[in-house]
Image 1 (spheres, helix red, strand yellow):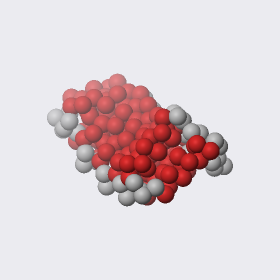
Image 2 (cartoon, one colour; image 1 turned 120 degrees about the horizontal axis):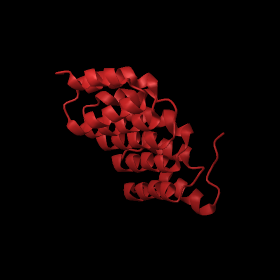
Image 3 (cartoon, helix red, strand yellow; image 1 turned 60 degrees about the vertical axis):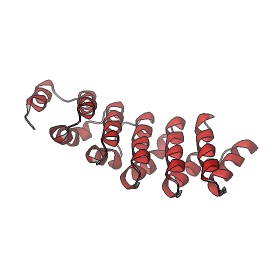
Length: 178
């Protein structure tokens, strides 16, 4: 069930996000929808996250979705994470997924563990630690074995622990020369 924004002000923000010519205005509308937590805005925000030409608007839209904490946005955010060309948008989409109190990780989030951008990998590992999905353990193990960035490795270790990694397997991974 898609719920549209209810108040005239909320409807105005959603309409401007969809149609305003100015990217700055669309970005601020997306931000405002998240900041004031407009509960019916997820569909409009997902449309902007998937299709706006401006990466700042897309990033504001995925941030707003994280603020709304609407689990129905998870698949759409996972798609944005998997397909957007902008690392800032992908990283914020990963963060947003960690805000949704999910019990299983969307496909795009697990795949982001191998993203070419270290910040995206860091945020994906953080989000996976929030979700604590044991199904992500094989991907987390593989990512940790290849990761060179110390901050990302710490986030991956945290995600492994939260997802239920056994101590002896974690010790083996940490001691591995890879």
